[in-house]
Image (tube, rainbow, N blue to C red; front, side, top):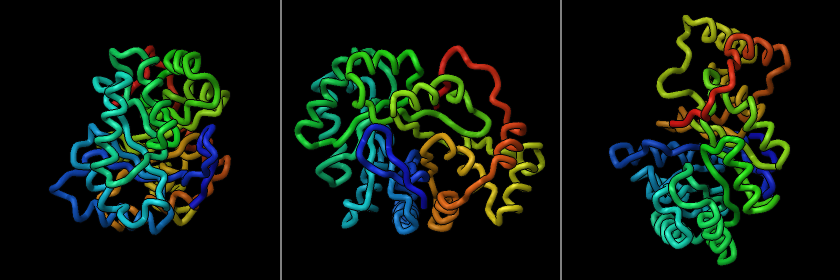
Amino acid sequence: MRFRPFGSTARDVAIIGQGSWRMDERNRASSVSALRRGLDAGMTHIDTAEMYGDAEPIVGQAIAGRRDEVFLVSKVLPHNASRAGTIVACERSLARLGTDRLDCYLLHWRGSYPLEETIAGFEQLVQHGKILSWGVSNFDEEDLDEALAIAGSGRIACNQVLYHLDERAIEHAVIPWCDRNDVAVVGYSPFGSGDFPAPSSPGGRVLAEIAAAHGASVRQVALAALARHAFVIPKASSPDHAIDNAGAGDLLLDEAAFARLDAAFPLGRKPRSLPMI
């Protein structure tokens, strides 16, 4: 597994991590096993959120006894993101996760509370050691400009955004903005929402050919392509699935492979608003 600096933090973080969206009590055992196997394979960046329902307790069970290995991220919902509400929401997440701190805490998306309030809450949590850094999610470049003006440089650790081969909108402006300002980009839903390219599609055929040439799986190629620009947090439904995801962390694609993927999955025009799920 390769690691690289996580934005302006002093941490090196695994480029392939683990998501937890849609983990629930019905699949608790398999989810815990998948998360633990992912940790064994080096996927020590684990992402969750208060919005994800049962996911925080499941993640907490998976990391019990291994907390120091993990770069743990959770998120506050916009309707909880007043200054005081952010602090209360974080305390609830910490309790569900069974830990005393988060490595990074994110605003899930913009809501009605002014960013000044949310950021003040984040900074208070940092001062009290409840979170080690903070970031945002689903922010376009205008939102990022506003957050930077409020917080100052070196405070926004990351921006977590929708990113998969068929949805590359963040490459227009969000990724360049983050690169200029030392903000990590974290891509969620790296296989889309059930729309992963079919093997018979042009993109699917290109992925399969590149995978065969590298002795890799198609999903590993897709993740490695996204990891060129971002940290990536796929969810795994089983230990075998987690191991397959982790293999992308060691897969190095050459410029010829990237050129083929760029042609098969064209960037397209910049949208008026940033897509999100």
